[in-house]
Length: 133
Image 1 (cartoon, rainbow, N blue to C red):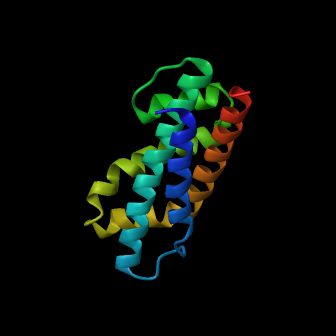
Image 2: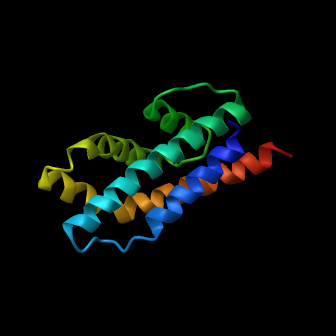
């Protein structure tokens, strides 16, 4: 799948996360927000992977190397990359949302992660548009 298509999918996922009022007001809303965060994170890092491959010829598989390459290729700044690495760890904990402490920890970070994902996706879109000309 080409980078443009991955970006479109990530944009749809991010809009679904942006539609949720944060912080969540109930356990059900919290769990739904975490689920949306999970699939949005997946869509955005995979879009980054596609952009890096299409524009720069970089082939990577897991999220953390994609984040590091995004930083090296100026798609994320140093602070955003550090936060994205933490976000990856939190994404890996989403399978444990039955643990209220973990669920609350992730939910508390969702506004910050949502903004990070928006900035990253905007950078990916701009890079893809520059590269396709």
